[in-house]
Amino acid sequence: METSKQKTVFGIVGGGWRAGFFLKIAQELPDRFGVCGVVTRSAEKGQALERQWGVKTYRTVAELLKQESPGFVVVSVLREVAPGFIEELAKNGVPVLSETPPCLDLDGLLRLNKLTEAGAKIQVAEQYPLQPLLSSQIAVANSGMLGRISETQVTLCHDYHAVSLIRKLLGIGFENAEISA
Image 1: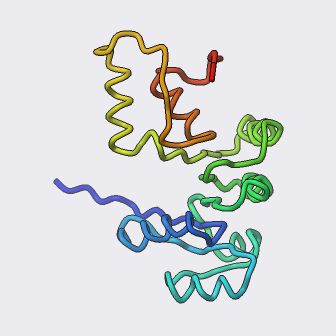
Image 2: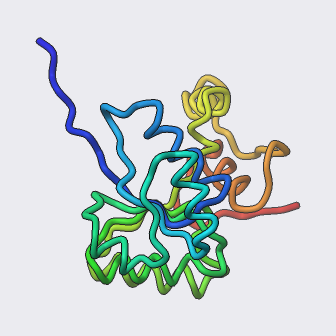
Image 3: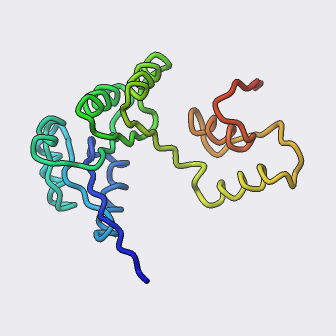
């Protein structure tokens, strides 16, 4: 028996390189995903996105939400401006999938965390641990076959991506860890 999957319709804030990946997913799997609109500040960029991807564009989140009802919105903009968009969407009850990083610093993360404590649905996308080669390496590291893993070196990526991989390879979540470099 075949089960039908409901189509997921989402919006996007941002029209750059990373946003293109989400547009490509919707284009390649139109029976599963649809983009109801893209928010981009520039009308010129909006027109280019409309031509290239066949999507509607808006200049503000308020315009998007007035015209559309996305199941969630991908926020794919610079870390300097992402928190404002995330907060606006959260205050309107719209779930958010944010590209990394969702803000500039710890204070910004704490403000976003307060939104989740108040019921906002905010998820931050981190793709490195899900890449097939890395996912396999993490599985081996966490399988017990190598004994207790207490050290790792990551040179594939940097910054928050590397920290995410290190935590996965060491099998730790959000608890404190000792780091030496």
